[in-house]
Amino acid sequence: MQTLHKEGKLSINLVDHHQLFGNDLSLVPSICRILDHRAEVPEALAELPSSAKVTIKAVGSCCTLVAQEILDRKPNLLTAVVARLLKGTILLDTVCFSEQAGRTTPHDVEIVEQCERAERLELFLSLVIARKDVSQLTPSQLLRKDMKVTKLITLDLYFHHVRQSFANVYFRVNSLPRTLPTAVFPHHQVI
Ligand SMILES: [Mn+2]
Figure (spheres, rainbow, N blue to C red):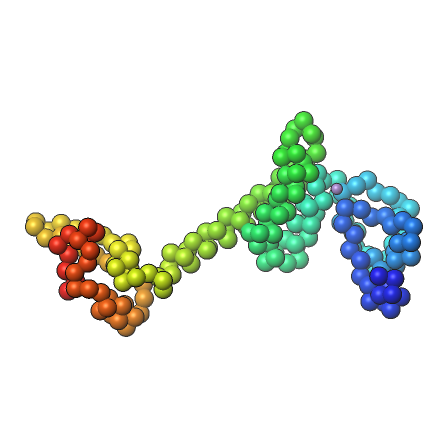
């Protein structure tokens, strides 16, 4: 790290602390970003390069500030997995928003809600995609999907709704046996 620092190739982001000690003190000029929720140490802040961006806020979890940074700069990075990791850490740090622990701030709560929204949205979108994807269904599964049945006196009518190109459906349905399993489709015939 010292070598990178001397070559001017080091950029340090400090998270959950903002003070360097011992040998690391010489790296202070390479600090470019601080995200912290501890009480400010004025003498440490005074040593920072003027270009360093500092966010120090008394939230329950430093992950709240990390999540906020992601939302402000690259919201697309907040995938369900990232959201779950951030949410988990915030819940751990705030003892699951326990009043007794007294660590939770409205910002922590808001960020956890945003993480849950991101998880919900990704789950929803993956389900929409899965619902549309019929590529792995067998022809008979394809016909059973979203099947509607109407009775016409003595005749059962089965309606199948398949969102696919006609050529694809025609090819796959034509590979069906002319009679489907009677347990599932009693008296059913493909026409
Ligand atoms: Mn902390």
